[in-house]
Amino acid sequence: MAKQYLPPGIRVRQKASGVAYFYLKTDSLEKELALGPDRDAAFAVWRLHALSRFVSTKPVARICALLEAFKLAEVPTRDRRQQPALEKQLAALEEFFVRYGNPELSADWPTAEEYLRARGARCELRGCAEIRLMIHIWGWAQKLRLIDGQRTCLWTSASTNVRVRLGIDREIGEALLYFVNQECTSSASETARKERSHAPTSRRNPASTRSISISPGDHKMEIHRRLVQSLSGEAATVFLRDAVTQLRADGRPDLAREAQRLSACELHAVLLLALAGCVETNESKLLLGTSRSTRLKEFRAISVARKR
Picture (cartoon, rainbow, N blue to C red):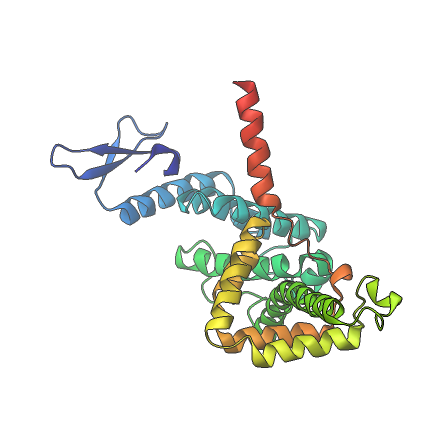
């Protein structure tokens, strides 16, 4: 295992037998503590050690302290690719709770609905993910006996689960609707172009040479037609695969993960949910189709090459 994927203080060495052994080394220990060959067990020991050091300096009595404990003791054990997203989610939660006075764990907090309103419509999917993370952190802290095991997280409720699921479905539906809109527009424009090219020259209307304008009603009917006739079975699988690839290229791995989990029936459901809102392509709050993630990687590579 590469060193950079290990939490601070964890060491790994290869034995003569070829088995990798984990060790714990910190300032408070005079020599390294052997943790054995099991990675998960080694991380569990490291987690308890990190928590004991944290709790000795700061009691976990308020929400921000709970978030900080999770950041220090849990995030370093996660896959390095997940860590930046987790840190951003924790920062958003902390900013929100600081604004409300960093309430005690035993006190009442703002509701999940208030949190989503504070995050705004542009961050609905991220806000829903942050609510789920807060619920997860609460359960994590109870398992480790950091907080009272009898008290339920205030954001754990059937109504919150429904609201969070609706927010996720709405945003992923809007993202996928963008790609359906693009394909429908291209299809309609290509059809109109072919019709103009085959029309007799004498009967061709000069106005027909102008750019194609599709009314919202026609556009919506085209989308419904595509949903019914095209996006089923193998076509739905191909569409989702292409959408996931583009979402990743656009720097939205969160949307890509949600799209990857969808079945054909669920795809129809989220698209119909987005259609009910009927967000026009040019008014969408999502920045899609730009492949900005790919372009950023190219710019970074060029910058590094120039420095060399």
